[in-house]
Image 1 (tube, rainbow, N blue to C red):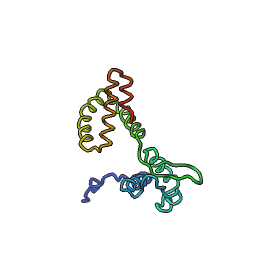
Image 2: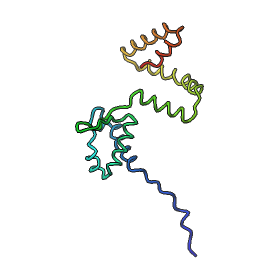
Image 3: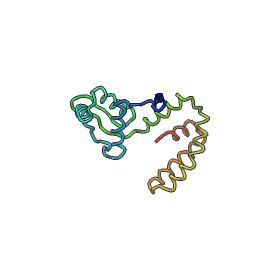
Image 4: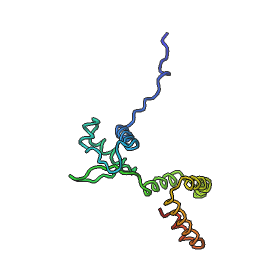
Length: 159
């Protein structure tokens, strides 16, 4: 009598080739092999090095750019340069996450109230003299705007 061996098999999930290239380039950026300002190899070189198609390489570069890890300039003197995600990139990602998951503003505010004091303490304990001066200046601006809600909000979101 034959045994039923199908129960031992599980689905095999193969990542998209572009996702594998994204992970590889992101890893090189995270480990410092590529630093901000470095030019990535050309599309042609990436194709040769990885054995991937032009479409796959371009797809990976578009995703890396949308994540704020590279900036790509078209043309003969262009290319893809390593950068770091900026405040706007992170802000857009958080906003998209919050909106797409239906997170309430009250939940965000509760989280902020819970987390900010601990972060402020760590910032104060690990600050330099210049950073302390900056914190004192920002605090003075907050105190001056205490009765002016629009001004207070502007200070709160200004880098």
